[in-house]
Image (cartoon, rainbow, N blue to C red; front, side, top):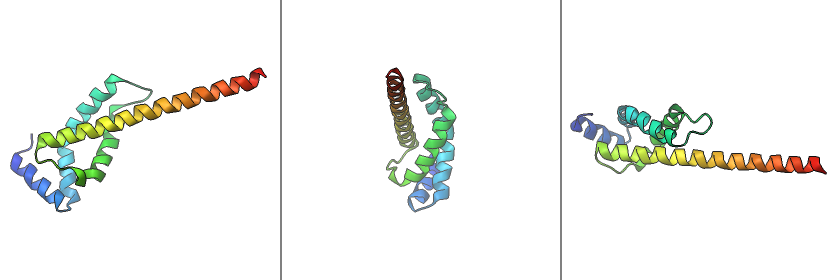
Amino acid sequence: MMPQDVFDRLLQESRAGSKEAWGELLTYAYPFMVETARRLTKRKVIGRDRPSDLVQAGYVRAFEKGVQFAGHSQAELEAWLARLLGNLHANHVRDLSRWREDEHLEQIVAHGREAK
């Protein structure tokens, strides 16, 4: 765990606009993000749904959305990152489901045309 004074300093710097400080906070949280992604992708493995893909997408999204983090502690940062990863994973599962439904409908239409 990062010492609280270091966390506080990095958080203050990131809120003052330092992307480097926000990057350091996310780098600290990287192992937590990996473990969270592993848990999420174990629940419903679809195709090539890998924890590393989710972590990469989450890291990019967290870096972009850092200004929205309103917490003050490491636990709040981890909770925020867990929600972010959970939302990304849920969106991925939903999009994959839609893609499969579309693919299934295309097959039905194609077979219907062949039957005529």
